[in-house]
Amino acid sequence: MRSIAILTLLLLGFSQPAFALSGKAFVYDGDTIRISGQSIRLWGIDAAELTQSCKGAPCGQMAKYKLVTIIGGRDVTCEPRGKSYQRVVALCRADGRDIGKEMIRAGMAFESIQYSGGAYTADEDDAREKHAGVWGMNAMSPTLWRMCRAENSCISRKQFLEDFRPIRGRIAPFDAAYALDYAPRVKRRGVYAVNAEVNRRPYQPDTKRDQVLAPDDFWKHGGDCDKFALTKMLELRAQGYRKMVYLVLQERDGPGAHAVLALPENGIMLALDNRYSQPVPLTTLYQMYKPVYFIDVDSGVLWHASKA
Image (cartoon, rainbow, N blue to C red; front, side):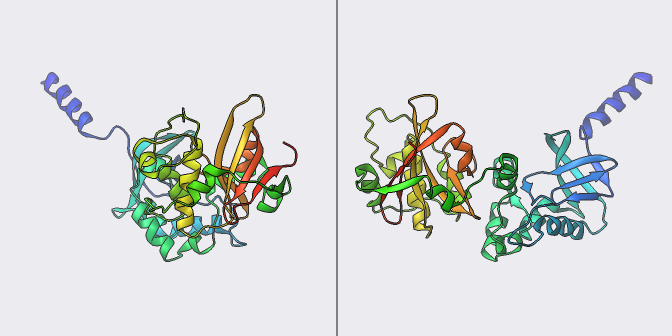
C-alpha cells in the first residue's frame, strides 16, 4: 500500500506545473507585479518606467494605473517562462485574459518581440494605428529611455551635426542604391519593426568590396554592414521617414570601418546597427568608433567629420 501511495504522489507531482503563482496581485509598475511576496515581470512586454515622461505626460505612472485597472482586484494566475534580475518572468492572466496582451492593446506597453516571438505583434500594430496610449505620445521605448539615462550622453540631431561640415563629392555606391526602384519587404511600420526585420538576414562579408546593393540577393543571403544600412534606408524612405543619414565610422583603436543608418527619433539620434536587435543611441557606437562621414538621405550631400 505504501508503494502505491508513493507512486500516486509522484504521479500527482508530475501532473502539476513545476512552479505556478496565483492570488491577489500588487502592481509595482506597468510590467511588474507581486504575488505572495514574489516579484513577477510580465512576459513579452515592456512598459514605460515609473519616472518616464512622454511629451510631458507621466506615461510611466499611466502604465501602472492602467495595469491596476486591467487586473481590477481579481485574482491573477501566472505561468512562469523564465527569470530576469531575480524576478520570475511569467505570462499572467486575470479571469483567463492575458494581462500583457491587454496592456499592449491599450497602447500602454511595447512588445518585447525578442522574447514574445511576435505573439502580440498584431495587437501592437492595431494600437499604433489607433494612436492608443503611448502611440499618441510619440513615446520613447523604455529600453531606449533606460539606455539614455544610464549613459547620460544621448545626443540630438543638432548636436550630431555640430561635429560635421558639408563638402563636395559623391559616393557612387550610395547613389546607385538610392536610385533603385525598390519594392519594400517589411510589412510592419516604424523604425523598430524595420530594424528587427532587416537584421534577421545573415551577415556576409563583402569580399568584392563593391558596396553595391542587390535587394533580392540581400533578402535571400544577407550581406555586410553597408547592405544592412542601405536596405533599412530604402525601407524607411518608402514609409516616409526623413532626416536619415548613411553614416560611416572607424574603430577608435583599429583600422576597421562600420556603416549604419542613423536618424532622429523622440529627440535623439538613433543608430540602426545590424549587430543590435533594437535601435541604440548613436553615442553607444561612439564609445567604440569615431564618425568619418555621412550622406544626408534627403539631399544626397556628403558631410565629413570635422575632427576625423
